[in-house]
Length: 386
Ligand SMILES: Cc1cc2nc3c(=O)[nH]c(=O)nc-3n(C[C@H](O)[C@H](O)[C@H](O)COP(=O)(O)OP(=O)(O)OC[C@H]3O[C@@H](n4cnc5c(N)ncnc54)[C@H](O)[C@@H]3O)c2cc1C
Image 1 (cartoon, rainbow, N blue to C red):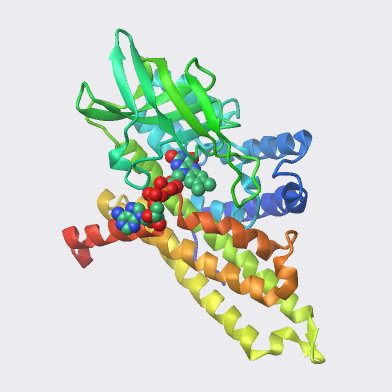
Image 2 (image 1 turned 180 degrees about the horizontal axis):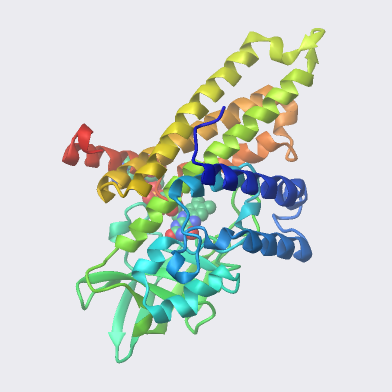
């Protein structure tokens, strides 16, 4: 089932599929059985190949040596990378276009551009234990002291904190009645890991809890202009929500293909399992939902490419994140059922995705928060404004 795509998107779709099939997928079980970690030479090889292919430059403006690909094309790439479990596709850093609007030339040179060469890796320290979903209620502070800002706060679930060389750190500026993002190097005095919990998935990227106590960063590492507040964090949310949609479509496609192949091979009562109507209905529901999910994900990507009103884009990215992540969870559940006991084995793709896709309904804003964003947008702008 193909959605019509531009020639460029089709070209990149093929490149990403080959990379996913040849470099990543063969290592899924090995990663699962080894705390998500692959041998260094494989991790390094995969990262090097991703950089050679241009994956670290997809969303980087041409003026900074990037590929500046259309969002439609980026979705086509991330859909293919989403076919792979254990987050093996997170082996390269991802500079995003909003960073080039937000950052000074000095910040770009020091933090963002080295990501294109794989020299830096990012992580995002936004969520806190108190405000949680209510990101507007963030309590971490940044207070100006001479040429520095002094950061204090506790940040939870910092994905890739164990691998990253710097943080994007969101804080309130109580003295300036403002808030801002900061670029913060790993390992500075005052940064402490409070906990490194285990999660349902088996990823090399951990999600530690950090305490920032009187951490000094030069004022030049404040991102954006006074009054920008959370706008760049919202840009990151939009990008990530759309790409969660893309990856969820890829995961669902793989689950359907694998469940169908199994149902064709598995003989029950002397005939392939796929001849049972109960199994066909599960596959039919999954394909139908995937079709809807793909259409809306690519439509939202094209809205970004057209430069539609950013508030409408924000609501659409929430709709994509809500619907597509929940769709993929339903597909994974059906795939486990089709595989039967085999679908409950840790080496089975359905079991892996059944656990891994669950968090897509939680991070980058839970499904409930997406519904709130969509409902508020509907009430403000009306149906035609979405
Ligand atoms: C594995 C993992 C990785 C993560 N990575 C990162 C990261 O890299 N950086 C980062 O900053 N954060 C990260 N997060 C945090 C993630 O974005 C938050 O967990 C998420 O936004 C929910 O916040 P919370 O956990 O505090 O839940 P809570 O806010 O405590 O929510 C609990 C429940 O209440 C519901 N709820 C909350 N408010 C409302 C409301 N107003 N109306 C109705 N229901 C509501 C929620 O939907 C949820 O069901 C990660 C989380 C996980 C699990």
